[in-house]
Length: 54
Image (cartoon, rainbow, N blue to C red; front, side, top):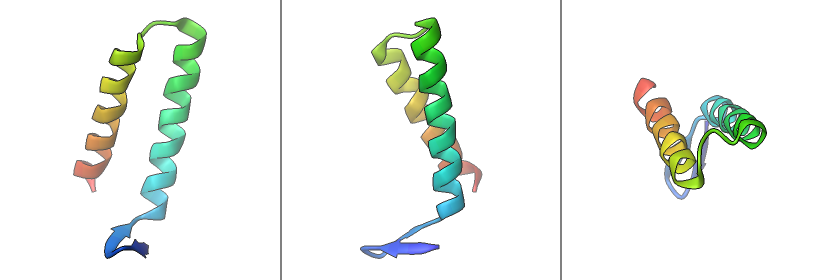
């Protein structure tokens, strides 16, 4: 884990979350299923889930 300004960062979690978000965005760019506001909600939810699970 890295520490930035006294906040511990789990690098594995951050990488996993980043991959998940990139895949979500890539899929949405192809399908145009969600608008920007909906994608923001989905991204926030994914971040919250990752933070709560561990």
